[in-house]
Length: 62
Image (cartoon, rainbow, N blue to C red; front, side):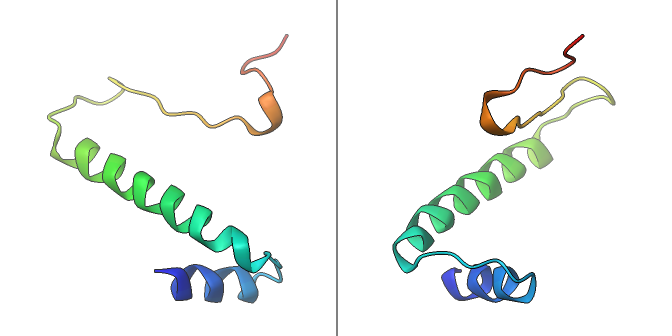
């Protein structure tokens, strides 16, 4: 998994310190687990929304 992440980031020109790859791998694995759980759930359209805000921003700021 680390090699796949490394390849994708390098293709995009993103440089990551070597010590950060285990963190990225753990984060990606947790995302895959959430995806599996969501795929198995019997949800109707629009039952759930998933948002990720960078740098602590709030959603729908007015």
